[in-house]
Amino acid sequence: MVASQKVVKKTCVRDKAVMRPVTVMVPKVVYTNQAGTTDVVKNIERVRMVSKSVMKPTIQMQQKSIMKTGTRMVTKTVMTEDRRIVKKILPLAVTGCGCYQQTCACAGQPGCSCCAPTCNCAPPLEWKVSMVPMEVQVEEEYQVPTTVTVPVSVDMPHTIEVPETYMEQVRERHPQEIHVAKTIHVAKTTL
Image (cartoon, rainbow, N blue to C red):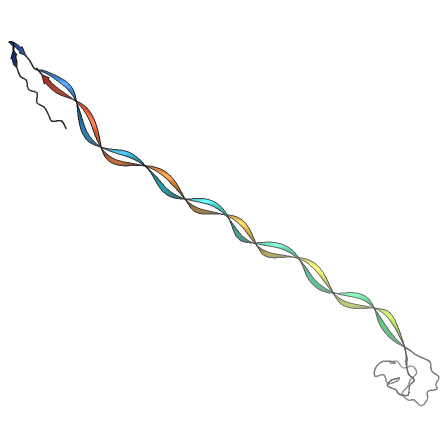
């Protein structure tokens, strides 16, 4: 800082002339300290969340066609043996046989008492064997296409948020004392 100066007026005598003092304003540089700020650029690491697509297994229900085995009863024609009794008309030569009847209704059946073989004195029966078609019910397997719903694991895209680091430039203001030069005008007296 500049101290205040006193302006002194002197009267000088030279060669008998009177000289008067002259006051002139002269520029003077004065240095002062002032409060100020400076900008500082810094790189700061920051974190932000970003979207990312990832594949995740997901359970989905899908329809699937399969062959299922079933059974059913069907009618088939088969050839079977047919045993028929051939009845001979016998003369009434068989006498003395009380259990035999010439027109026996149960002939050839087990436990029939009016003809052979239960009745011992009856003439033997003659059989005729022939093949005859016969319809029978039999079980048959068959395939049926069936649609079923089954769970299946499928990879599907999903969006998730993940952290990501990045650098950001930040300007910061810091207080600082600044040395400032200032020009002021000061009075200067000369003779």
